[in-house]
Image (cartoon, rainbow, N blue to C red):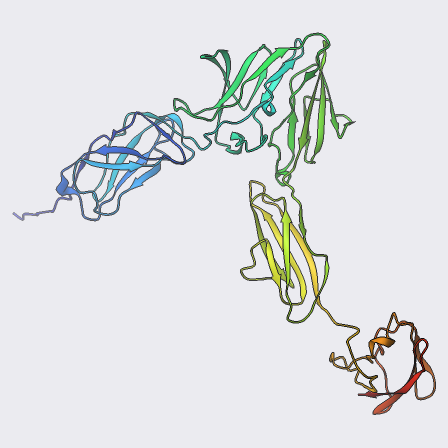
Amino acid sequence: MILFIGKLEAQIVIGTPNLQFTQACANESFNTFTVNFVFNPESGVDSSNQFIVEMSDSEGDFSNSNIVFTSNPGTINKSPASVDISLPVDTAGEGYRIKIRSTNPVASSTSSDSFSAYYKIQDSPFTINNLNSTANFCPGGSYLLTIDNPGTGNNDSPLNYPSLTFNWFKEINSTTSIFITQSPTLSVSQEGKYFVETNYGTCTSNSFSNRVTVSEASSGEEVSATIESSSGNPFCAADGPTTLSTVQGNGYQWYKEGAPISGATNQTFETSISGAYSVIVNFGSCEATGNIELETGAFTSSLDIPFNNMLEAGDSLSVTVTTSAINPEFQWFLEGEVIPNATESVFTVTDFGNYSVIITQTNNCNTTNELVFLVEEFINLFPEVENIPNLISPNGDGINDTWVIPTPYVSGSNTEVLIYSSQGKIVMRTKDYLNNWPEEYLNVSSVNEVYYYIIIPQDQEPKKGSITIIK
């Protein structure tokens, strides 16, 4: 008989997690929750083992669980153990569960009791109805209450956080309110005082709106209608149009900049163009008017210099971008090439050439603007020279290429300047000399061709001489 002796792999049992909280209400300043668990035997845990805490979805399903804690290898080797977890920012629901698993040996606990958990990504008061405390509706009609986006002042609109949902309430008295519906907006057809809270379940929160008292309009009373933009305001036109909608009535007419829009006679109107929009809603018994100043994600940018700029060699030029972009980023270019580390709104130019800067808006609507400008070398056309030169070398090397004469004889002095060829032909005659002769290439026939000049200053004796062209 042959005896086979095999080594049994170590095994452990992990107990059901013991939550040290009844609900998890997290925000930016607090996101730590303690979980205790036991495992047995301690000797069965390998020195490389890691304990991992998984959190289910809001329905208790672990198919797409989140790992909310992972221990360093071998650090948890005593039972009972205690770990701290943090909630993902999109956590929102009433039925989460926790379970613990190990890596070496592989083992898993049963899931914990369910608990409510919310990460309060927006946890400050916000505004509705443009912070107006009253509104009214036509008899037989309704009024649309909406969350402001962005709203006035420093309003932190919860609409900036797409994962959030909202609970609307009607206030009965100072201590009692009744839940109406869960929706981004509320159509009101009954008088009362209304408000909305961000849905953080049983977690207390500061994310709530101002109160709005809605009344039925009396005969002849002016009535307002709310307009909502489906993509917010401002919206990102680069992602497509937004839909403007208003309260339900018997008839509609939409306007842009005060002019009626042909065919725009439905409860909604789609557009991708910014501007002042309004709507008249007919209820039969009266009419309501709504207005919205719709803005796209476009932005403006400008430079504090003109397009053409002159710079003397060795000097520098500071250029500043002013922009209305949200969270802008900058990249500067010279001759189409990226300038390394040039990523601020201010850039110092030291070289000549074609420059550009691209401004990128980095909010939810990533759009760009490009600004361009030119920097050329400044050349003094009227340098200070003492004598009238008699030699020039127009070969394009930038040195002595033109006939430069003293400033008392140049443009603005009313001095007449004449230049003759050796054959006596006048090749230039002007009372506005710009130190620019010859402007074009001279096809000289001899090695050093000679020209002659006469300079006739106002109220002075003429000055005569020759100019030798050196090839």
